[in-house]
Amino acid sequence: MSLKDYRLTFMTVTGVLTLLVASPALSRILVYPRTEFFTELWILDANHRAEGYPFNIICNQNYSIYLGIANRLGYCAYYMVQVKFRNQTQPSPTSFGPIEDRVPSSLPSIYNFTVFVADEDVWETLLTFSFDYQESNSRIRVYTLTLNGSSSHLNDEIILWNSTRRGYYGFLFFELWLYNLDENKFEYHGRFVGLWLNMTVETI
Image (cartoon, rainbow, N blue to C red; front, side):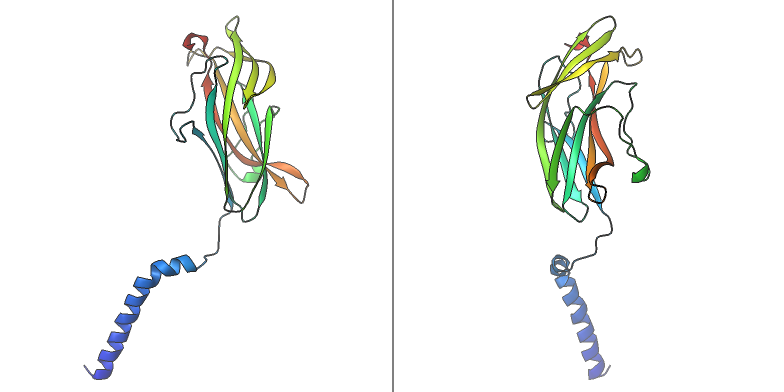
């Protein structure tokens, strides 16, 4: 092998090694185009984990969860979270299929949160809630939901006995809405999270 061939081989190996060593640093400098734009929505338990969620609910006792939003839309977004509550037969929102085909629950909102979240930023808040309810004639009447110290009447929401699961179950859920600048209104963003709650009096 000639001196020229040695020199070419040496330069090639040196170049490859340089790229391998520099690649971690280059990954911090290079900006790759974003191909996906979406919003994350979640709830965590009082210990900031995805495990110890409230389930067996005692009348007028406080329970805490974290509600969070992460903006990956590529712009500063204006969100609204609608808090709703339903029994097992009332309409649920949808979160599958094309986003334009997803629909919110037709139930009225109990509370609304509005928040601006910058692109690639996260918003999270602690929510403390309790329910006032009573069992009567094989049904639960839910009178009020108190959220972060503010109480709202639920118009004596009725939850019937579930003979299969042997209990009274209500669903507390949070729908995500996004402000549409072109339409000048909030639109359902196709995402919701929630908790099934066992309000069976025997567990009290």
